Length: 338
Length: 284
Image (cartoon, rainbow over all chains, first blue to last red; front, side, top):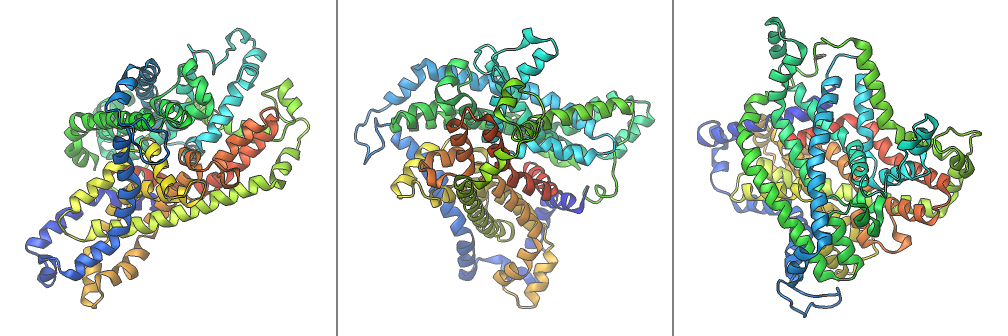
């Protein structure tokens, strides 16, 4: 644990006390500063505008505005040239919700969301527990496990499709160790492809989950497990009764990020399965559907409508999760985490 | 918590015999690194070696693939494009991000909560959702097939992460320093320039690296905006190369491994900051 790591996380955890001090000083403490805090003068308003203006303008212009425009374009049949004129009302949305290709993609997204949680969660938890033990070379392993996360999706996709193709390295190794009957067309077989995708996704993103969980475990006071050991608890009992419950806030936040990422999955599928094969291999997602049916087909109105559907679904799930899972333990995260 | 963390805080070892743990750890490292090594080592083989024995080692080692790629103008042009895009994106994200974060962390005004919520909400939605309308916006601005057409949206989409990481960081700068600066007749802006920026260098580096690697690896946005080979960034280049030379597997592997070097170098240099920044962002 270096100073850097500690420095960053301490800055984060001190957010709460920092806010408290701020509120306090406004009411009673430090009289010399009081006049400054009272009203906001013109100079200060100007500073606020000058400092935050550029960022807000960029954000509104290139993030919020496009999303709003998608809602507008989604009502038109439009090829992307000039001003859209062919208003079709909700036709695009009706088409989307009736298109079996979209419904399949939606189903795949759902499967990927669930499988990501079910596969990556326990594996990452196990790895984090393993790496949380005292051992030589621990820091090296922590770095190496994070390497796939840093490599670009294009490289990951290119490498894995070469490794997994029918005459690739995986099948070759299987044949050479006498397991030739296991060799498969991992990428094109519709029964297998989604599992292949899950394998690659797990490989790519597991490091992120492990690092998060490890950071969460570092925050659990050691005295707790020591006390449990004194009371005769076994290693597994300690992990189950102390580590897991105290890690729950971290796990919930990871799950949230994982769900959002899985709903918007595009790069890896598009790179490995291309724009046409994805649907026959059973790996298409809402985002690949959006790109193939929208931009690649030249139907920009339709593509924007798909973007709106994707946005609404993501937002709906995000809000549900915030409401029912995250909010309940925000206070817990603050008190338990330290 | 941070006060106890650095002092050799190690969890107790119990239950497992050490060899099991080490074997598991080694297996894990092998699994994580295997595909990466496959690309790098595969680049040193010939196509016939790869065809006859897909999982073998180079025999003999063949350096031609790497030297061919390194001698090609296409590769270096793409490296150049990626570098320009990543550097300008990083400067933009960190510059605009630290200014906005300073306001959010150190000023009290109406709408501050809303402004923070705006950026926090942006964290939930990567560029995927907005890409189709974004492409139309860039087209209307006449920026298709130009690097600014990629840079500007990347800055905007990089801001949420940066703000979420930097606000707590800037907030943690002790009040006393600001008060001392105020007594010395240092304006708030002067305080920002002379105290806040130097003190927040670690946070700026973390967010800068995240922005750089994110931009270096970015695929979807360049895919939409850059259709001209001359403006391709490396990820697009890798894909184009892989489909153009699909029979020349060895060269594809060499191209691919060369293109991941910068991200890997950056990562290994600043690994602790990246990891710290990511976990910090999530916890905050």
